[in-house]
Length: 127
Ligand SMILES: [Cu+2]
Image (cartoon, helix red, strand yellow):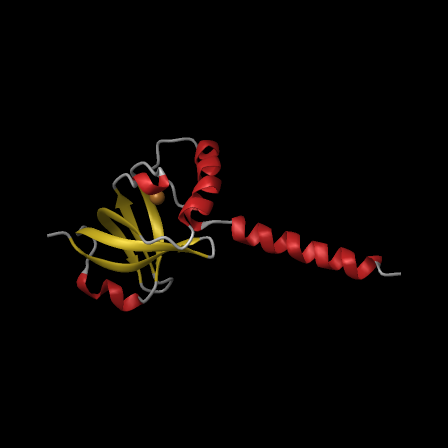
């Protein structure tokens, strides 16, 4: 009877995929004006096109969460991801990145996609 270990392996694979698909980005698009379903399709394409790519954006800092180590930014459109202007949370590569910024600052930032999240690797006030 080898079928049980096989079923367990499949169940594990399925639940791992579900966790990856559960993206921060989708949950945080409170102010976005476009449809979620529409975005989802684009996200799937973007995942392949932008994996490991260094991306950049500009926007305004809305919140800095020292406990969760995230920042919420209302960013301008990001053509590389086909993102419209939206307010969303980003993870931070290193929380000390927030030392030079405050809520309501206009910032420019760089980020990457990692494990289904968008992670800021550099951020500074706009000049
Ligand atoms: Cu966004």
